[in-house]
Amino acid sequence: MSASNSFHKAEIITAVSVTFGAAAVGILIYKTFFSKSKCVKPKVNLDLQKDNLKVVHAFDIEDLGDEAVYCRCWRSKKETGDNVGPLIIKRKEA
Image (cartoon, rainbow, N blue to C red; front, side):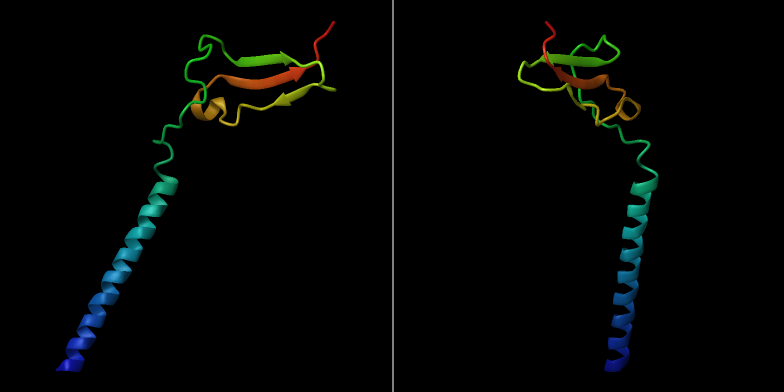
């Protein structure tokens, strides 16, 4: 009787483990493929020049040899609807 009872407990533990594993995999698949469209990504620019289509700043630095452009648009408008453009640093034109 003891061997039968032990075997029954092992079957229950195996069934519960497989069920929880399958549920975890199902939740991960659901979150990966189906919930992205519902997820709202945050905007970078919350309050600067919201009336402009794209916010671009240019700064003059005399010691800079060439023009340098730094991208602030790592969250694109397609994803967030934001209006942040590049940061342009160049020498002051005399």
